[in-house]
Length: 215
Image (cartoon, rainbow, N blue to C red; front, side):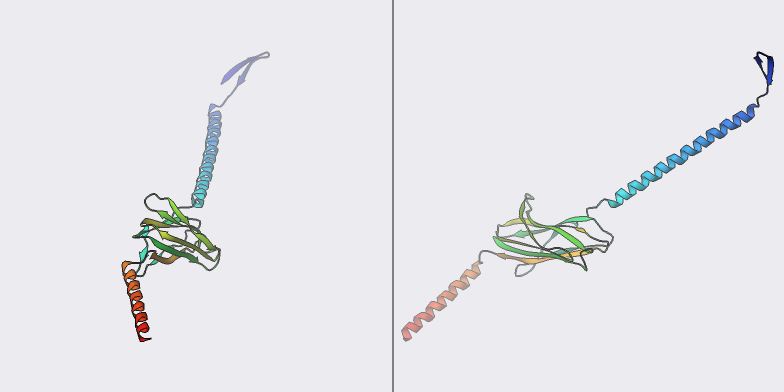
């Protein structure tokens, strides 16, 4: 029991402390609960936004640099294949080769899919010096869409180490492939070729002299 003094005398006032304390406690708990819910909502929203950004960011799926297959007769061939569920990811694949002497290089790169909305989008095809990574020649785009194709030709390519770079991105989650075929042929005839030419000229001269004698 508490007493308050007023102009009319002493007024008894009864205050139940347990009730006040309980009300205050409920208010504090309510504030804590609402704060926790707000923080949880903020954390969830942030995590959702982060996951969406992470999923949307393209990923580099370039393959390990490989070697160009050089077969008898100077034929070149290489390619790559990309698995499903790689949509929007990009690649810059490198293919190494060596030129022993001045040679003529001719290449055709292509990727074929069912439509422009599937497969690969080839965005670049270039020839580079392996020693300096300097661009030697950019290829020429021939077609884009369901079929992407590029060509590249270089006459009298000097002896040295080079690589061909194929750039592009995956259009859909169905994956895709690209292949390149061409030739690397010596621009200077081999010594054996010269010998055959000389032998042929000698035979023609011999036959011409016999005809003259016969006439």
